[in-house]
Image 1: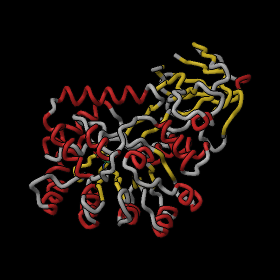
Image 2: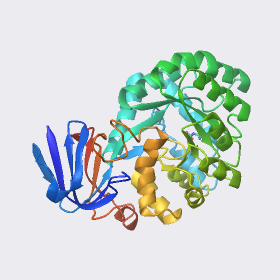
Image 3: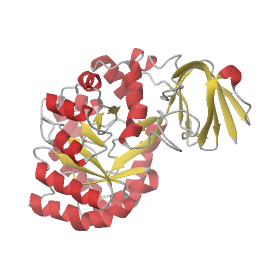
Length: 385
Ligand code: NIG
């Protein structure tokens, strides 16, 4: 069944040749984009949807979330807004609640958050384990995540659980835990930060993952400067996420590498950290992604539009840069930006993930911040809104 989406006032394709088109149309056939071009040259299709001059983008690609969790940390948030600093120690609260939850409750929570994000235009998700921190609970989190989300990351190295020596825990993560979780995940992540895992421990986790053929990601430079960025680049990680506290050498290393700098501005706002220096990263030639970091502690939002608006209004990114970072950039961070079924782009052969804004141009995402602007969404060719 094919669908012609026509009457597009402004079409962002993220394709180098197609660029951004006025008066455009897109044809979807099953789960693929099969045609993109000027509306007056569009081929026929089984169904025709006229979007009345609205702007159209690829669906958001949210490349950093933590959606397998139970419990609530409103009190921690309130204390933070009253002046307490964010301490990653709050992760332990979610770990306790997650371990106590049933499979059904964890799966239902995950589905609820995915549905909430899809309704706002997110069509491709990454999500992490990391609130289990035992072999059984990490496998359970990964298994539940894989039922709902296409890119699953093992984050056993999120925090050293209570009662464990850090090095002993790292040995567990690198051995028995990784062996048990690996069949369910494509990626491994480590929280490389003072108070979590140091450089050597983080390197050990990444090396163990690499030896098993898994892709690498790093949480780095979230709470202060540190070794996260150079380590991610050295190990060939697909992305280093947060990048709130970068020094000149970090920016140079990212610019010279294939590692994406994934910025999480909603998290920086919610934890009252400074916003990352997107401008310097972009000017240096680094690849930047924007993601929600949706989790119950440091960033409880699924809104990619909020991240885009913040990036434009507060981080000196242009609308084009921010939209690209939240679509193509996220896809690049997941190594999904090219080839058959690519996400974050609209070109023939890409996955049929389309986001229609109730706006004449993508600029409205920043011009009308906080206003729900999602008009329609196709995910894998199915209209889901
Ligand atoms: O990306 N930095 C570590 N992990 C999460 C926080 C999780 C939490 O506080 O529950 C993050 O911000």
